[in-house]
Image (cartoon, rainbow, N blue to C red; front, side):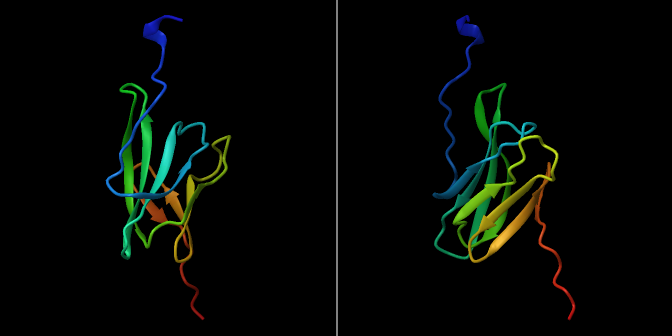
Length: 115
């Protein structure tokens, strides 16, 4: 294999805040995607979704959304075939499930039942 065909082997990404939790996505249609949770000692924290831009060989931020309290754990839906909705679970003060879209990420929690 020539030097021109080789890919970069070490990639770097600097988050805008201290990272507390992270997890790799395993979807085949969203290769090299990582969720990063912030650690800010206050209520307002963030989750950032970064992906590898294979043309520039750099990780870039694809989406950022607000998260109450730091995320203690992040986990993508274990979807190795890419057939399920693109979901991300986070824990902090309680478990939340997020539906990830191309331009936005929104909570997929069901509405509170009227009782």
